[in-house]
Image (cartoon, rainbow, N blue to C red; front, side):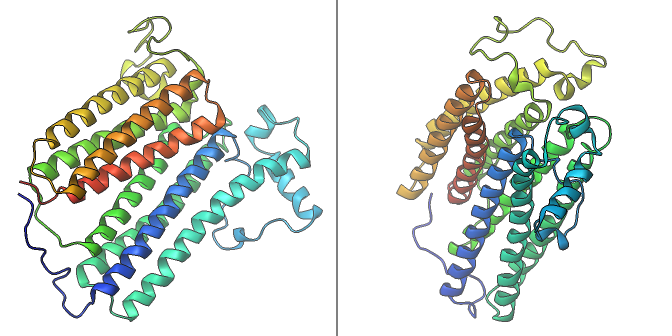
Length: 351
């Protein structure tokens, strides 16, 4: 049963509700920036711009090329690596600029997230607007943000050696860490607006659904990393069959879900179908629970986001990864993760 009386917003009376609200707004703003970062990352990936900057300079990298000499130096650096030599040897300096700017914005936005997180964090600490438990969670988030920057460069490095593409394993890890940070920002932000409660059966089911959603999104990371979405562009059948010939035909077979184009796409399709069915089941079951209006609204949001994501996924596949749809599909994954996180929090006190 939902709680009839709203407990105090915090177990630290010295921190005012206004301070909690301000911290929540800041964290939701950071989550929105992470969402935009994922969208920019998807655009960078789909336009094959991610390997245009071949050095990692965490501090001096914020300065863009200022003159033609700078552009020529960057172009010459890029020309020494596999992507240029095997795919983009036709590019002039002017052509190079178009892929450089997108990757530059992607990296700059990541640095901006760090600044927007760290400076207010220090301010809130100085104003004693954050309780002890939350403080350590936020330090953990700051460390995760730094690790995400390292993971991004580790991913780029994989495309600077032999093959002109990043490792699908590192790409998926990079995406997965972004989702973890996004979920944590939302969760801690929500904790600032409402009392904490012990997890219930409804909350556990919500977290199980969220786990399945994240797992399905990560399987999409392997599709993106292998460019597996550019083949078998039919639905609901794949290569004219429900279970296509050649599935799991790989040596060794256990690597097929990670390295075989057909198997990777087939896995993602069926995980997406399973996830959609489980969202419907979750929504239907929630209809039998004694929910408040905002809790009911949270379950509706998850269902709506899932319907949108399925539509985007099918449309993206049939369009042979049309750029706007591809970016929207990646954004839709984060929206679905966000709504599932919100529902898990709202249902945390439902018996």
